[in-house]
Length: 323
Image (cartoon, rainbow, N blue to C red; front, side, top):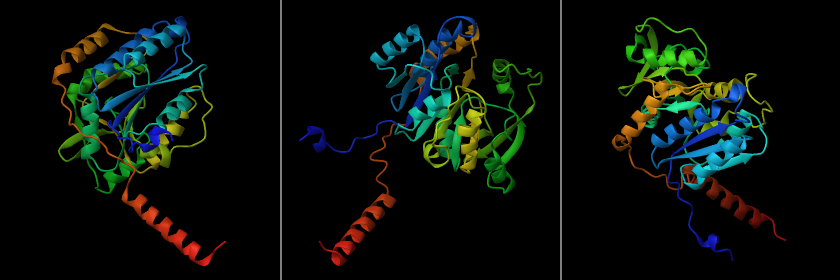
């Protein structure tokens, strides 16, 4: 007998999974600085999470330099799970293919050019814990996305189920301009422009978000996202169709953190990004997380009812039918 059959059910010792999909085929033209950007992305992630969060990297047909780097990080156990594709199968198919195989409750779907800031994990978790029916939270605070794929949230505001107010958040001004610059949008000049703030249990967040990085509730992967492949390399509304709309259709809230805890870097590493990472390193000893474990999360009451029902039907069947 296989000795593993005698072992108890596997315990899940993490509750959060971050998935990065990286496609860097070369180091010229568009991809000239992409490797340095990706390295900073991964290193910032490593420095801002604890043992209750684990990293999956999907190598979506990258060149040998990238492949060897992530292989080394996997051997050093900074990367928990490493998936290799010989060719680029498309961003969405690589991302969701990896996501559907994980067991954690919260799954962060991230581009490979996101710079994480110390405290992001705690801030995102706080939003999930203090708001009811949250579908996704982004650590990139966005001021003008309250009507993008958020009809479920707008309905809760309209029906007074969610406290809402437009108010300035001046401390987000510089970071939000960095975000606008990264997507080639016009910068803002007034730090007192109003943000779409929602509040619950004394915790604040912003209604709406972008999709460079999103932490989602795992259930959405199986309840509202399409199960067929996208067959799209990138763009063409694939993120909207496979991620944004499903979050909205789930009836859950799409939020971003009240203050900014991550950055979309784009194609080039700038000095301020290095400064953010140095601050991450300086804050390593000051991160606070609640310790917890999920034990056998899928042994729910509904499963017990199903088991009893199944046994009853079997006994009833054997009572009436015999060989």
